[in-house]
Length: 596
Image (cartoon, rainbow, N blue to C red; front, side, top):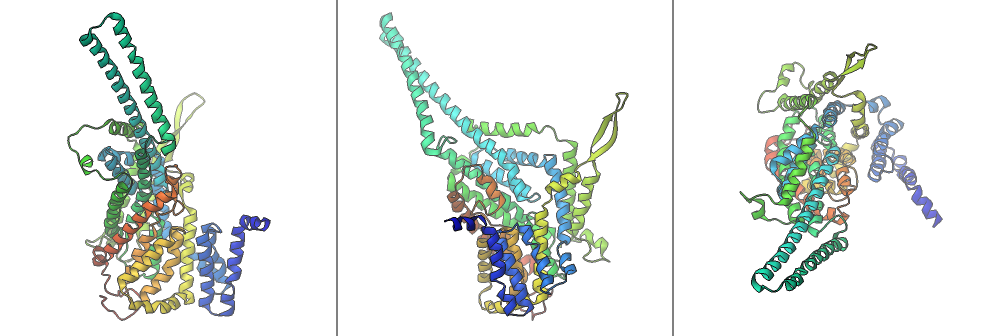
């Protein structure tokens, strides 16, 4: 037992050592660059999946091991750790820092919820829509962490308002019953005064019954739902709202290249591997992913609503009816939260303007259906990218004044001596996900090593027999594998491991690489089953309303819906956008052919 306890204590250390030693015969016995690179790939993949070391620390291993095995020189490996992706990330984090610093994200979320109304079903859809919109521009984690306190306040207010209304109704009922009894005694029976007094003594008896009923309600909530919930319906409502925030924060990230790290990792990998393809930019990504995300969000709302509260169409689409006390209480909470923000400040307005300018420049750089502003730099094709826009706007956040800094002179006069910009470097550093930046860099280094060593080509040759399978089946299998793996491994680690494998697979079976890589990338975000699958899940789980079984039951349905919608898109609007049925000229030279 003592040995077992030591193993449990030092399990991460043992896992790292055993992973390195057990796989060591691979490069020692097979003296090829492919085997040596495969060894590095396996070690990094095991440590990423098990998280025996921090993900960003494991990402540094290619920088150590590739030079030692003679796969790549250290200078070339180091250059893979900082690419165009990192510049784009820096600009986006500048925007996110300003949005959160000046509470613009809270104002947007509350305003969108106020627009959809306070009916529980529509309120949930309002929270999901606002959360998904914020997640398009902010990280999924920060979005969920910001919205959940608002949702919790609304849910608790609904429960307390309902309890108050029910208690008031009970007291009114008993008081009316008692008053009615007295009126009958006085007007109909007409007995003597002492008899009326005897009848009047019944009033306290009714009051005592009311107290008993009130105590009964208090006693019922403990064994059934615990101290937080008065009824099962209240508990179900809390579960619904929690899961809606977790899932919508993930779904919203699908819609933009910058919405989640997996999109950024894929885009950089794709642009490096296929530099002649200029088909992926902010605008084209939004055009194909937004319909998919919108459909998944709507279907997820329907699924969660049906699973926890059921659908009452008559109640949802009622017209002209007055709000219930429960709905009024909910509306009051949201309105009070919004009023606490006060009028829109100068800093919020400037941040919002810069946000719209950044989005407009991203969309109009190279929209495809019209000439974009990137044509102004036609003599330098491919030089201007989305990161150029992000850096321009990002630098403005450090330049534009937010407020004046004043000091008091010896004469007592208050004078301005400097100004504070919208964000400071220290604030930017606190928001910048350096661990993700290093993790992504390690993935790029790993991909470069697979290409240089010939491992990618070797994998492609071994996977070429899969070409006999229908293309839709290959896409489905790869999507399901990715969706399953991402439940137990981090999303960035999953996509980083699989991209160097899926790219040569597509080339080997003569399929447009986008046809396999796009659905796999989108499905990497479908980590809905477990609290540990991604940070938004963990955040909502920490509020104590959910059990793991609740998340598994709800998440399985959302996973199935997500994969189904992505598969539908790959054979409809996405296929027409990128001409996915033809092997492209920008991929490695293989005889062009049209696939069924």
